Length: 113
Image 1 (cartoon, one colour):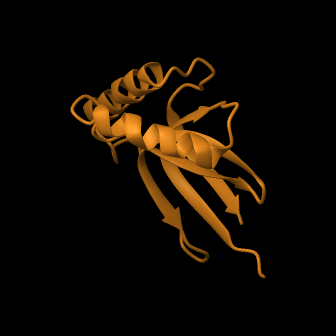
Image 2 (cartoon, rainbow, N blue to C red):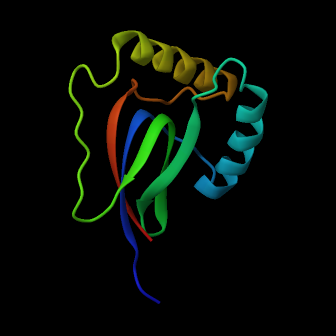
């Protein structure tokens, strides 16, 4: 069995959780479906070390394949859109009961599986 390496580029926030990421993902998917009218852009990402994934709430998320890159500038995402993402991420985090979160921002998340 080989190792798989991915890298994700996303806008979102890191969430410290006590459960396993795959268990938390099931709960979050169900809750986010109920929040879709207020937080339509929010999804989750579980990625990280081989057996120690971390958990993120994200809005924009793309996989950056080997040999490729992602490029953003200050105007790639309009300020109004980013402010709306921040609002959605905050509302989702609160509705999901998260208190240990980071400030929203651009994330580069390596994933080894």
